[in-house]
Length: 81
Image 1 (cartoon, rainbow, N blue to C red):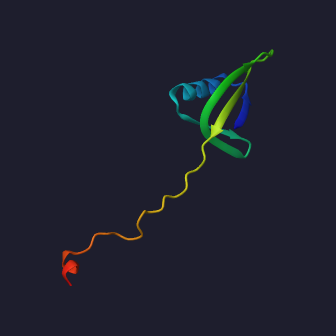
Image 2: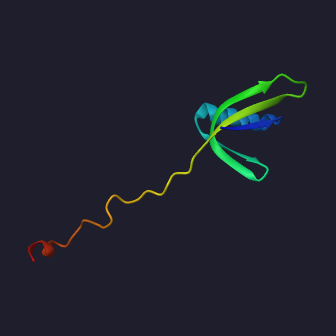
Image 3: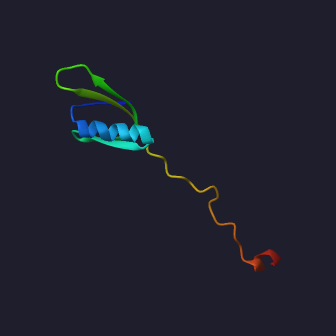
């Protein structure tokens, strides 16, 4: 899980909307970029309002390998020779 802290209310709104709609959100923190589903948005009790966002990163899917190495379609004539 990836934890991100922010004080930007517009960004928090974007994360809450993504969490409510079940969409993925992208966070760019420094040089790293994390894309995943928002698990929680928690407000911290402090003088300037701050929020802690927890994101479950999306693991890139492996390339799908074809089930068969070649096409099974053959010309009709090959069946008789």
